[in-house]
Image (cartoon, rainbow, N blue to C red; front, side):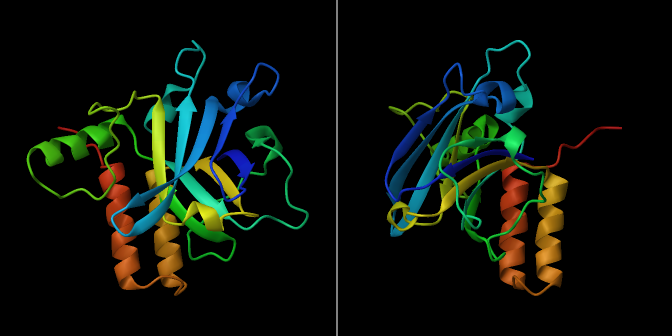
Length: 206
């Protein structure tokens, strides 16, 4: 389900919902912060979403459900401002190999960050992801981050699309892309591993 769409300028940008925007009421997003980050030799566009977790009628599943950030080519005519979910058509999740998607990444969440932190403290490197710390502390659960593998400076004229998905939809999209020849076996394996590490299946004792 599409949540939000923003025009990108190629530089850092911060969007905050206000009382008249309707964004918080529609999708539960208080704000979006877009900034560049270099990790090793790789350049990323870091997307931080701030979620409203205080409203009694808010959707708390946004704190941990699969969320995806996509940098896409805009449709004909482009967009001028922030567009909330109510004005977007529902669509299936897309992969970076699709023509309109330039780059994409899964958002982290609190449990994923805690797993990365535990591995880091133990000197291990099993889970793939970027550990985000604030003065050595983990961010609050209502902040989620996506490290999109594209330099921010080259995103001018493109769009950021944020949508929520499910593990089933993400896995199905990977398998469909592989069957269509849009990704190879290594890409398929890496995508499925990333999905599983971000959102591992919960085992149920019988």
